[in-house]
Length: 126
Image 1 (tube, helix red, strand yellow):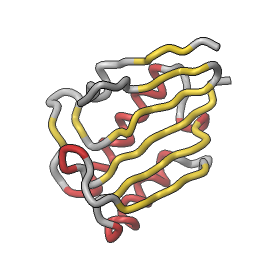
Image 2 (image 1 turned 90 degrees about the horizontal axis):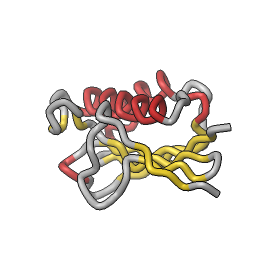
Image 3 (image 1 turned 90 degrees about the vertical axis):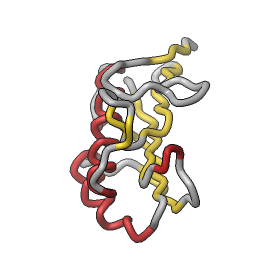
Image 4 (image 1 turned 135 degrees about the vertical axis):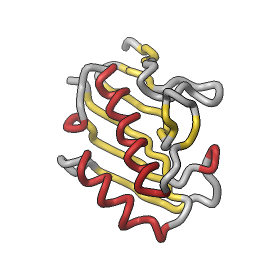
């Protein structure tokens, strides 16, 4: 099986010792994405909606780098800093993940850089 890291400047650089994503065989595993604007390297302002939207843009850029789109996503893991943001997050999430992949969504006490949301993705490349 071939294992290869993917990288794009259209999504934020990793903030630690990890890859933006890994292709392993016919599967893509994306590291958790948050609401960082890749142009500034800073978390976007505007609350959960702005962060969720930027998170989806970052995921889209990484999926495109791998040659696929949201329809190939099979599993997401979503982390919210405040479960009271669930409905607002869900509204934006639903606009992008229209094929309804399997999902877990949990509250996390703290997220990196003070994120309100972080999303991991597993997708099928075949």
